[in-house]
Length: 172
Image (cartoon, rainbow, N blue to C red; front, side, top):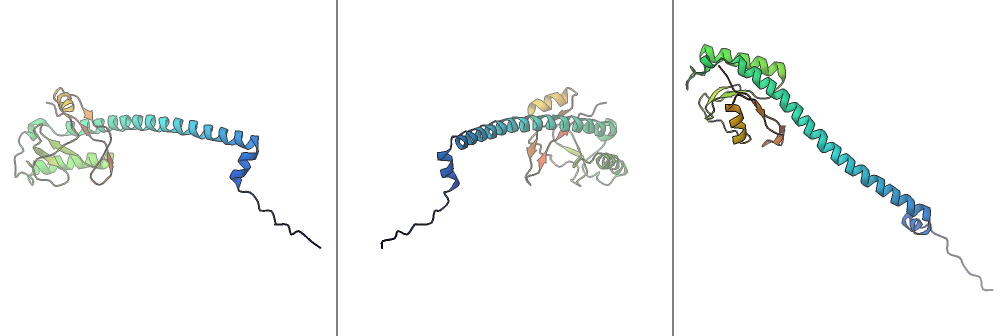
C-alpha cells in the first residue's frame, strides 16, 4: 500500500495575503495615503505652531526687557565704572533686576552699552567685561539705536538648551 503523507499546511506570512486579495491591496493603499497626508499636515502644523510660539514668547520677552530698561535710570548707569561691583548703587540696581527676574522667570538679565561694555549682570560677571552677543545682528542693533525693542528667533545654546533673547534700549 502506497500511502501519501501530507505535509501540514503552514500559515502564509501576512504579506502574501496582500498579493491574493484586492481588498487587502486597496486597504494598504488607502492606509498609506492617509498616513502620508497626515504626516504632511502634521509637519506643516508643527512648523506653523513653532513660528507662532517663538513670536509670542519673543514679544513677551520684549515686554520684560522694556521693564528692565525702565527700572535702570540712564543717569545712574552713566555713573557706573569698572570696579564698582560692590557699591551701594550697583547692588540696588542689581536687586531691582533680580526682582524682575524672579517675577518673570527669565534666565538672564544683563544691562550693557552698545559697545558691549557690561554694566550690570546678575550672573556676577565683572563690570566692564566684554559681552558677546552673537545672535544680536546688525539690523537689530540699528532698531535698538532707533529706540525699538527686538528679539531673536529661537536658537540652541552651547548646552543644547533652546533660547530666545530680547533686547530693549534704555532711554532718557
